[in-house]
Image 1 (spheres, one colour):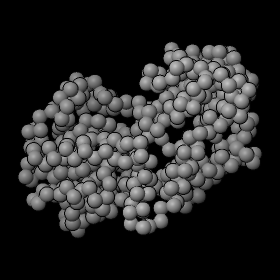
Image 2 (image 1 turned 135 degrees about the vertical axis):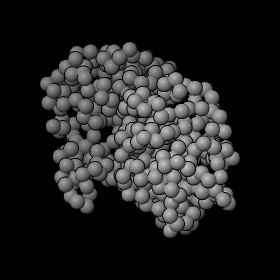
Image 3 (image 1 turned 60 degrees about the vertical axis):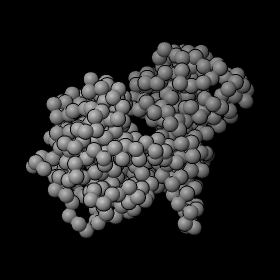
Image 4 (image 1 turned 120 degrees about the vertical axis):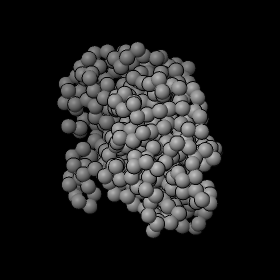
Length: 428
């Protein structure tokens, strides 16, 4: 091993690609491997398969330290190899592990005998120990990927949670040198503890989200405004400045729901109490229907075949993922309506709907609409003024759950703005 170990990343989807570029930015020579030659060639040419703010610029800046390819033989040149492919989930929230198992097998077969192999992909408790081989240094590292903030999270992690066969043993020099370059705490623990730690993080996030959603909904009915309450909570040291307190349309994406489903299954298997986690899932399902409840009460009971403008299809901003998207769920419940749909990154054609019109831009989606629903808080949408939106609409109903529009300007434009966490007309 040289003083500066070479780092490999197997799997060039969201997790592996962002992690590889961050490693190069820290000064390491990096090999990005993907078993699909088309993916490796595309990334090598600068055509990235994912949308992530800052990723393309960081790749260009550190391209000289990055190599990409589909030949697993080159992994033998690496001192540390991360198995870092995204792990998909099915509709029940279960991880589909076949792909990650095949990738790990290829890495273990190709790696040098002295190399460290680290599973970075999210896996259930018991996975890493089940795939350890005699004489192979295998670790599990908790990933910190957040879509839309993946570059920031990869460059500046709060800590490294590292699952080890023996957490008391010193780390191999190559792995210690690599992790040490990030200047954050390293927390070694047994495999199962690390695997459960990742789930624990997401359960705590889900708890905060669920509390915010439940109390924001209550605020909508009693005349309170959750936007006034949340800053007070952040000043409480027991809650914290970075707590997830913004109300939302349920839990989107797949990772948090995957972990909640894992806890429910594990609790059932081992006879432990998983009721609190089941309540998080129930609250998420309830809040995903916020938009359809508002539309039915304020419009569709009187105008059942209304025209609805929809801004955003992705489950959150700065991603192309529509996994568990509130917009998709809403569209499925509007079969009798005409929909005018726009998303800055996803084509409306991904949605199957007999009366869907693909709008050319956000204002076109608002044209002649009886209501406009802003389902994804894309920064792109903040450029528009409430008055220009109102001018194009036929109706006045504006579903703006994330308060992209200033409430006073929305009132001045004559819009009936509905937001999460405040009664109609009570946002300000």
